[in-house]
Image (cartoon, rainbow, N blue to C red; front, side):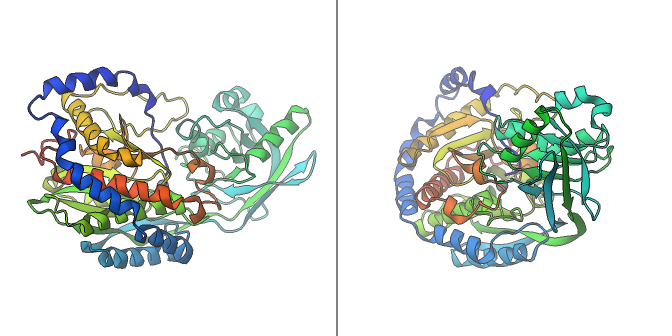
Length: 496
Ligand SMILES: [Zn+2]
């Protein structure tokens, strides 16, 4: 997961709007939806909770293919394996959809404090960073807690130095801007390199990578993550008042873009095959760990949910399409290619898009993002307040009530919450074009402890929690593909 949800602001006014929805749509209100689909939901939940195949697939992906960054050979193996696996598990129209992806290569990297003490840094270069000079960079460090402190130092305090962003973790969405934008913010004041305290709540001497984005107007300077412990020590040394000097070297570079692909498979609708509920996650990962939670769990749980619907004998009226998008982590080429390949009519026939990219911890429910309410999928940026969320339209309020009714079927797995605001970066091009989007939500109790690290390995995915996600996605997807109405957010397509 590259970005994250910001839901909190919109919660306050929701209750009243949901209440009014029921009276606005009395005859098509959601009261019958849960009764209509309870037998199917119970069947899908029982099957999912007993499923062994999904976790076995995730195990294979993690242990036999492993990390799979865009441009790498394991990614191509993952794509071929995923195609075969979709076919074996009963999907039809299985194919790959070409997408050209960046090829960023990490190379060797290391770092250390050289004064006033010598100490090795726990360092991991940020994705898309440029290299240091071959011998590395050695410079005085200047440690700042936030962008305001950086600005106060001005060019005189920053030029020629290595800026260390030591921002306390205030949630991923609020803190990730230091990783994404820190390099260019520091470069604008003449810094020669950047070290970023890892974007995580857990201090475990474990650096977390993730993409940065260079501002084209600023010099590109190398940037790496360091552990929380190292950032705190650098801050303590600076507080002693004598110069703190650091050295780091990175060989990171971009090679020529290379071909890759989304992997797509379907269960074809029995009455409206042209109408599509698209679900999935991203097949690429960072070049560390196994990409187990991020996002092996998302693609394997959504595949298992499809397999469960297929095995159940239920025949949804609309087509369910599974997509493993490529290059979510450092470019989004797969999500862009998928949306770009659709004709306007095909786009209008996308009645919902559901992304799972928050790990497979215990499921909580779904975030719903519709066009007029915005995707709810914003990232804090320096100096930019996110725009206030737009009020939900009457149709969106009604859709939320429908989703809450579907989610009420998910009591046995705990996924009964539906909130406005949600989606995912792979489906954001669809949502921008008006397709209603859903982000699968979990407790995220430990997701950001391991996210984008060497420790994102299979053991972090609890099999029981994984199966609950399979159940949640299977029920939500099946009902969306079969229910009489469709969600608001898209521009009129799919309505009967
Ligand atoms: Zn992800």
